[in-house]
Image (cartoon, rainbow, N blue to C red; front, top):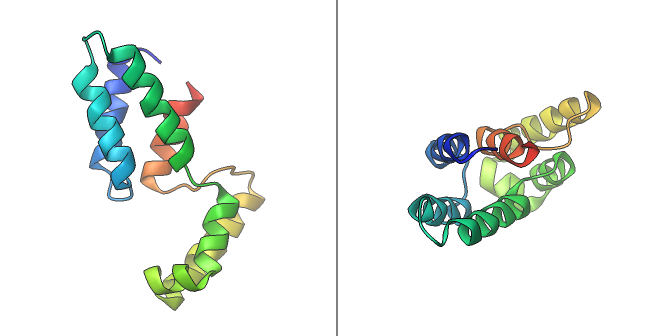
Amino acid sequence: MDTKLLVEKTRELMASQTCCAEAKEAAQRFLDAVGTAAEKEETEKYLAELEEDIVTVDGLISFARSDAGKAHFGEETAAGIAAHGEEIKAAGAKYCDCPACAIVAEILGK
């Protein structure tokens, strides 16, 4: 992925409501480093963070069914998320399809 497109996708990721704090911090460090001597290193760190943060569909289902997931989302919403996870898994999805994970999958796929 060229730098211009990576910057664009990074800004989209940072604006996503489902982007975690760690990814936002790594994204900002990457953006701050673009055009500097630290760009290559920060890009590598950023991509490594994204690989750690992307949620697999199995992870999504597992979390939604857990007590922590039920506490986080509420029991009814968690059940819906788990059901949605099962649907997208059956359709062949590898990752969660929330806005942040969809952008991260696009970034990592290029």
